[in-house]
Amino acid sequence: MKMLDVTLNGQIQQIPQGSNVRYMLDEMKLGKQAIVYLNGKKLLQKEYDVVLLQPFDELRIIKPLAGG
Image 1: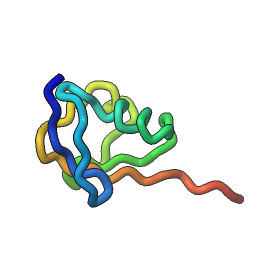
Image 2 (image 1 turned 60 degrees about the vertical axis):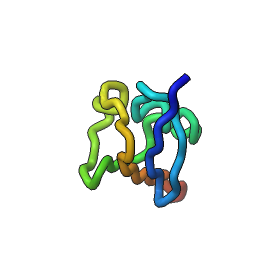
Image 3 (image 1 turned 180 degrees about the horizontal axis):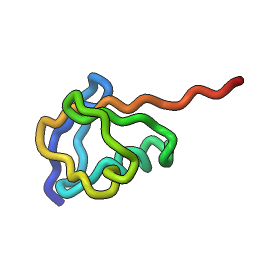
Image 4 (image 1 turned 60 degrees about the horizontal axis):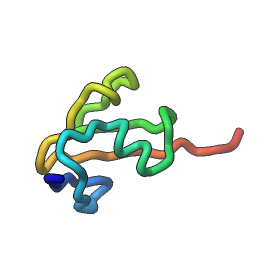
């Protein structure tokens, strides 16, 4: 399987080619609750399944905070 490098929250990660944002959220066990920025642009939740990651993409995934 061919791998590609992306930057996730400042750290380089290798992921399978053809992975989407949902793959990254599943790997982090976050589901749909996270806020995701791809190359500085905030993504909508409906985009998580359709946006394919490209080599050297920069992802920032913000985990939700619990509390109230």
